[in-house]
Structures are given as structure tokens and as C-alpha cells.
Length: 580
Ligand SMILES: *Cc1c(COP(=O)(O)O)cnc(C)c1O
Image 1 (cartoon, rainbow, N blue to C red):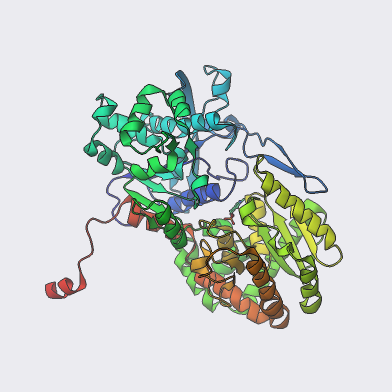
Image 2 (cartoon, rainbow, N blue to C red; image 1 turned 90 degrees about the vertical axis):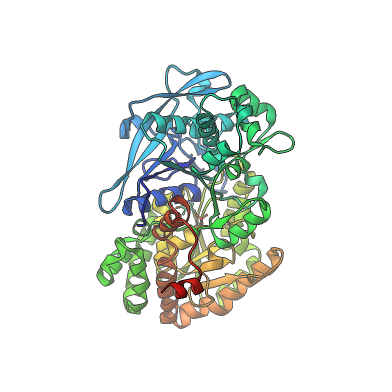
């Protein structure tokens, strides 16, 4: 690790996926946050993380025979699993003093290094009934609830770290805009009692030097935004005045959390090269870098692949770059490990759904949050064509998973569409939709299927990470060239693309046509006709993509570029020549 300059990183995220028993995440953002902490712990990085307790969790999903989703809370009690931190802090919300306590979780790395996670909780008797619910439901409630929740995260979190003794060596990493209000607390501290309108460039600069911002959303509508009256009501006069001083509100006075974070961060990044370009177009006034996401390799490699890597390059757990040497693992060994992972998945699918999949059949996996832009039903856009492809080239089965946000009607309709297609295809293609997609199931599916499918509407996939989990298990992707796949894809070597990289506007007809053509003419013939050729692609997925798209490489890039950048610019080459 480079010189850490005596600093410590405080990683703020609205969701963090810590472990199976703790339902404090909804999808990719939370899984990424958890994997970031796991790799930071492996690297013995000085870091502390802040999130909310989310006592009602992200919901338990039930699907009826038609694929109609219903939800029940996934409640958990922090007091049953975790210890409380001593200090309590307060946040002024709508003029009330809300008490905040915190629970301590610890993420341990391979050497035992621990990263504390501070889970904020307002469920205290001293608080009034509504305030007690503010840390209950992830992405729940209305605008008023959301803003109050983000105040607890950003402002309560900053206050809690202060109370816990973290001093001014802290670098604040704002993982997506939800925690951006912490910048106002830093600004207030910087002013040291001076009035908000006295804040000047030097004050903003002092705050900026402390903050790092990662944006994850490629569309303006995806960014949290709160109207002026709401802001004044929730934040009160003092903090609203501080906010005005930053001059980053929209013309109509509304607060956009992304603008606030952009305005007060010294380093800003998108989560893949493609996403950087999209973000630069959206926010042309800001310098935006890119650090491509990853996944925690040891967490996401299935048992059979962990054993395989341990045998061939035992150093991989400590240093993920050793996965590059998978290029020399005999194909037969990879095939055997995959067969074992596939059998484990088949057992799990049967246990959960009663459906027995066939081990010799090409199995496609598609699992992620169910939301319209992910287009989970695209493969069913022409059922007759799909039927004829299978008749001509060989059998196919498809496994699905994914929850729709309770208020996402489009996402819910998508799930019903898949159930309907499954019925139409009965007798031809087995289609299973599993309830309650979570990290355990994600691990089983990304390692057990033969092909990982991803066809979001471009450019809406900022990065995507489930295909990286698949790659670590030797499962190639068939995906549109968006997010990480734009970087990880080499046609026919690491997997296959849907559509080209230069396609102007997304065109659903052309893309679904391409999906069918790839399956019919390339992937199925390879899988059934030249099985070892298919395993060769699997091996490349590990060596070329598994070795790079992991959070160990990602965290090292954050250290180098964002947290503790080396001072100064590199010396130009010719000068260097003169010197030596
Ligand atoms: C990895 C993961 C995701 C993210 O999947 P994407 O393909 O990046 O959307 C969502 N949910 C769970 C449970 C995961 O493990």
C-alpha cells in the first residue's frame, strides 16, 4: 500500500450488504459497499463505515402462481447480533431534536484487520413515534421520510464519528448522493461559529479537501432531489442557509444531493469508463474520473472454484492478480469445478422451487433487481423464434431471480411477463423464477449457470457487478456493451456482446434480434458441438476478467487516485532522461 498519510477513510453508504442475516441492502449498490469493506479489510486499510440499521430490512418477496409480487418486512433486531456504541448524538430534524445511537459491526479481513461499521438507529424511546421509524425502511416512505433519513445518515453519521473520536484526519467517501448532507456538517464546523453567509472559497475548499464522491446513477431522474419548502422544513434555517451559501441548488431552489456532493468533493468518480463519459455529459462543470467496480473475489468464488484456485495458485486470496494465472489451469479441471457448482445450483433451485433442472442442458442465468430498464423479459420478445432456436440447436433452461421495489409497478409487471412466458414455453424451455434473490442465491446462480445474461437499456447500467461474480466462477456473459462489459468483453474470448459498442440509440428490436442470433449461431453450437471450446471461454473469463474486476484492484485504485493520491504530477519522460 502507498503511504497513507496518517489518514482514515469514512465510507458512507445508504446500504451496505454485510452478511446474509442482516437485510440492510437492496441490490448492487449495497453489495458493492460490502465488497468494498471486505477488500479494504483484506488490504488493512484504515477505514470506518457508516450506514443505517434498517430494522425492517429490505423486504421478503413472495410471488404467487401468476408472478404477482407481495412483500412483508424482513425484520431484524440489531440488539440480538451487535453491540451498541457508547455515545449518542442528535440531529435537528423539522425543529425536533432526534436522538441517534449506533450499533457496531466489524468486517474482518484475511489477516484479521477489522473495519468497524457504524449502523445508525433512531428507534429510541426519547424520540417521537415518526422519528423512531427513520432508520427502519431502506428507500421507504415519501420525500419527507427520505430527506429525514438522509439527514440521519449524513449529519447523524458525521456527528457520530466525531463523538467516537475520529478527528480531522478523516477523508469522507460519499458512496452515492444519499450521504451528501455530511458536507454541510463539515462546512458548519469549518465556519466555527461564523454565520453561513460568511462562508468563502477557503471554507469550501477546506471541506472539499476532505471529501470524495462516487456517483452511480447515469440518468438525471435517478438522483435524489428535494423541493425548497421541504428542505427548509426539514433542515431548518441554519442548515438551509449553509446550503444556500454553497450555491449548488437548482434554479427552483430544490436540493439535488448529487450537485451538493459534486460541489463539495475534491475527487469525483463514475463506476466504469463508459459511466464516466455519461457522467461528464450530465455534469460538464466537474472533473469526473472513473474507477471501475469490482466484487470481493473470495466471497463470490463458489466452493469448487475456491478449491481449484487454492490448488493452482494459493496466493490468489491475498493477491487477486494471481487469478491471471488461471490461464494455465487445465480445461478439464475447470470443467469439473463448474460441474460441481452447477450441481449445487440445481439442488438449491429444487429445494427452493421444486423444479429439477437438467445438468446437461445449457442454463442461462438472469438475476438482479427487477426494474424496467434491465429488461429481464427481452429473451421472450419472440417466443416462436426462441422455440425454433432450441429445436434447431439444442435444449435451454433459464433461471431468474430478483425483487421489484414495492412501488415499482413496471418492475412487478416484468416479473409477471416472465411467468407468462414460462407457461407458454412449458414443454420446450424450463423457466424458473426464484423468490427472494439475495447474496446466497446470487452466489449459487452466478457460479452454477453456463451463461450470464444481461441486457439493460443503454446507457443505464452504470457498471453492473453480477457478471463479474459469474466471471470469477468461469461463467461467461452475453451482454449489451454497457457498464463494465464495455471493458470486460472480448468477443468469443471472454463472452459475447448483444449489439455493437457504437450503436447510437438503443434499439430493442435490433438488440433482441442480436441476442437470438448469438444464441443460435454462436453460443449454443459451441456449447453442444465443441464443449472444450466453451470451457476455453470460461477460462478466459477467469484469467482476464476475474483478475481485474474485483474490489481488491478497485480499492487499491481508490487509495491511489482518491483517498491518498501521491503528491504532484509524474515527471515528463524527456526531463527524466535529462536527470538520469
Ligand atoms: C450482485 C448483486 C446485485 C447486483 O447485480 P447487477 O447485475 O449488478 O444488477 C443485486 N442483488 C444481489 C443480491 C447481488 O448479489
